[in-house]
Image (cartoon, rainbow, N blue to C red):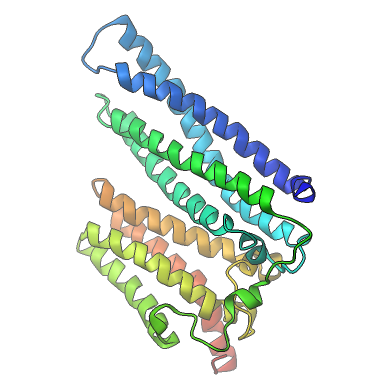
Length: 316
C-alpha cells in the first residue's frame, strides 16, 4: 500500500480529490441552510443575504464540479501509470480489477461526470432566468451530487489503499479473452452485437428527429452498454490489429494515439445530450447536437475497422 500511495500520480489525484471534497462539503452545508430559509417572495435582509451567499456557493459548486470532470481522464492516466509498478498489470485493466472497489468506482466517476454536465445545464438555465425558476431544483440536485461524490471519495480511498505492489494481478488478455466460452451476455453472437450497435445508433438518430425525447434517453443508455461491449470484443481488435487483444484500457495509451480518449469522450458527451433532451425543453439545436456527437462516436469507434477492411479486404 505504501508504494502505491507514494506514487506521485496517486498523491496528486488523492490531494486534489480531498481539496474538492472539502470545498463541496462546505458548499453542501451552506446549501442546506439556504434551502431551509430561502423565500423568493420575501423582501427581508435575510433573503438578501441568502441570495448573495447563494452566488458564492454556486460558484464553488461549479468550479469544483468542472475540475472533477477534468480529473476523470487524469484518473485513467493514473491507472495506466500504476500498471508499470503493479506485477501482472499491462495497462489500467489489471489495476482497476485488482480489488472489488475499482470497477464500481470508475462507473460512478462516469455517472458523476454526466450528472455534472446536466447540473451545469440546469445552473445555466437558472442564471438566465429572472425569477429563480430552477434555483431550488439545482440546489437539491447539487446535494444529490454531493451524496454520490461522498460515496466516490470513500471508494477511491479504499481502492488505492487496497492496491499493493506485492500481489500479482490479471492482465487485460486474461480478463477479456475467453477461448472456451462466449463472453457476451445472453450468449449472443458477435454479428448480433455489431448489428445491434449500428441499429441502436440509427434508432437514436430517428427518435431524435421525430422528437421522441424519452425514447432517445432510454436508447442512449442501451447504446452506451452495447458500445462498450462492441469496443472491447470487436472494434478494439482492429485498433490493435490483433484478434486476441481485447481491452478497453490500452486504447488510452500513446501506442494507439490515445484514441480511447476520443472514443470515450464522444460517448459521454453524446449520452449527455440525449439525457439533456429528455430532461430539459428541447431547442432547435438538440437534434443536431445529438446527431453530431453520436455520429462522432460511431466514427471514432469504427474508423480502424473500416480502414482495416479497405486495406486488407478481410476480417480479423
